[in-house]
Length: 66
Image: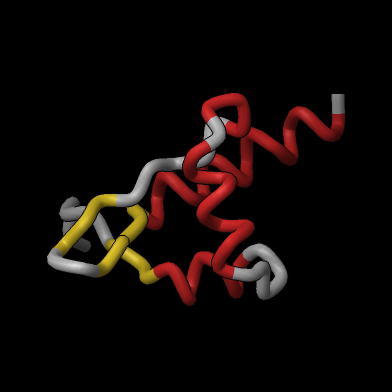
């Protein structure tokens, strides 16, 4: 197993959150209070570190169960 980060596209991120629209994803990434992982830019594409997305979801789930 490789230790290198695995990146996912905006489309995959949107699917993981219930097929949210592009605008919603943009708002989440621009709102510091959401603490949503920031994408990296590769040319014109935005990519997210899959591990950061998983961590974000786990933290939100933990907050919801408190």
